Image (tube, rainbow, N blue to C red; front, side, top):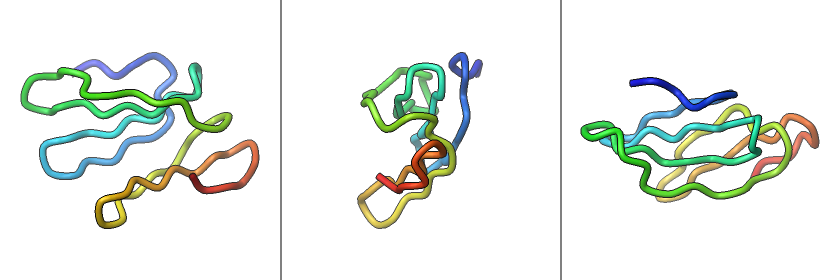
Length: 68
């Protein structure tokens, strides 16, 4: 499955891949079985590392050092 342009982080949780995209400062969820984008949301500048914590997705923002 091709990754979005500027992909800077990836975490897989079950049947969903969460992809951080530094070019558009977004994080999106992709259904692994079909490759269909489930959702996309704007985050802070230069998202990188991510982790799933319960039912939440934590996203590290490189430029500010914050976690969203």
